[in-house]
Image 1 (cartoon, helix red, strand yellow):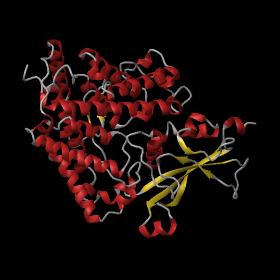
Image 2 (image 1 turned 30 degrees about the horizontal axis):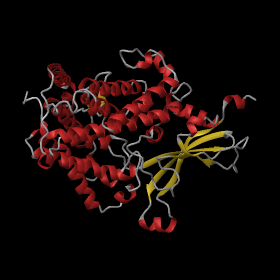
Image 3 (image 1 turned 135 degrees about the vertical axis):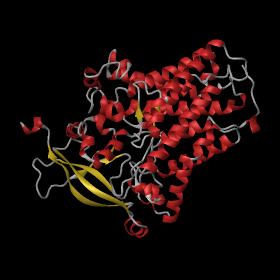
Image 4 (image 1 turned 90 degrees about the vertical axis):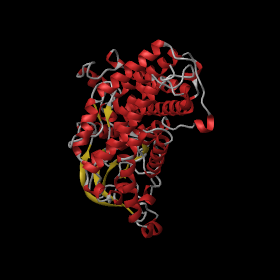
Length: 473
C-alpha cells in the first residue's frame, strides 16, 4: 500500500483539517447568530415558506423532515461544537470510521443549512466549503497516512478555484487586461476592510503590478500544483501569499482563508519534520477513496467544460449536494460605489423639517467618518446583500421590503444585525432609503475632516413608508 499514502505530508494534513474545522465553526456561528432575522419562521425569507415550494431532491436538507427555529439553532450550534472538537484534535483521537463520521456529519449539517438559505446563502464560498468538506471526509486521521488520491483531489479543487478566477477576469472586464482594475476595486469591493482605504491610495504603478501578479498566480502557477516537490510547495506558497494580501485588503468572508487552507495541503514540510509512517490502511478505506476519486473526476466534466467556455459562468454548482463546482470572482469591477442609506423618523407625518435618523450597519459603509471594520472570515450576510441591492433593486426584490417592515416593527432579531439603532425606545413611524454615491476621501480630505468617505446624494431609493396597521388606525 505504499502507493496509497504520502507520509511526508502528515503535518500538512493536520494543518488542513484543523484549519477547515475552524472555518466550519465560523460558518456555523454565522448561521446560528443571524438566521432568525434572515430566514427564521418570522424572518425576511422564511424557511417554512421556501420548503413548501421546494422538493427535497432539488434541495436536500434535513429541514424537509421538520422545521422550527429551535431545530435550526440546534443544527447550527451542534455543527459549531463538532467543528470546535475537530479543531482541538478529536478527529485524531478516535478510530478512523468515527473520524470520517464526524466530518460527514459536519458536511451534512451545513448542506442542510445552505440548501434552505436562499438568497442569503447564494455565495460561491458556501459551495467551496461544502466541496472541501466532502473531500475532508476521506482524508483520514492518525490511523493512516494521508491518501495520495484525496490530496490530488484537493489540488484539483485548488486549481479550479484559482484558474477559474483567473479566467473569469481575463475574459471579463477590459480593465483586467490593461491592468487598471485595482484603480477601482479597493474602493468598490462589496465590503472594504480597515486597510482598504490605504490600499486604494497606493501608487497606480503598484496597482498595475498587483493586477499583473494576480494574473501570474491565477493563470500560470496553478499548473505547478501537479509538479513534483518542492515546486508544488513553491506554487502553494505563492498562492498563500496572494490570499493573505487579499485578506488585508478587504472582507471576503472565508473565501481567502479556505483557499489558504487548501494550499496548505500541498506544502511539503518533511525536510523540517520528517516522515511519520503509519500502518497500512484498511481495504474498505482504500476502496472508498478510489471510488470517491473516480466519482469526482467523472463529475468534473461540467466544471472543466465551463472553464473552457467563452461564456464561462462564475460560482456555479451542478448538483444539489455541491460536490464538484465551478468558481470565479470579480470578472467585472465597478468604477463607482453606490450605497443605500436607511433612515427613520418618529414624526407622525413627514414634512420638510423632519429629522431623519440613520441606521448603522456593522460592515457596509455608512457614516463617512467610520473606518471600515475587519469581520472576515465571519460573514455578515445582510451587509453583503445591501451591496448587491445598491447595484440594482432587482437583487433586493424579495427581501428589502420585509427588512424595512421589521425596522418599522422594531423586530429585535433584525436590529441585532445592525451596529446602531437610532430608535432604542420605540420603533420609528416611517422608514425611507436613499441612494448615495460614495468615494474614498483623499489624504488632504481625511486630515481636514476625519472622514474616510465622501458621499453625495443621488436619488430616493425607497420613499417613506409606514406599517399598514398603523396607517389604518
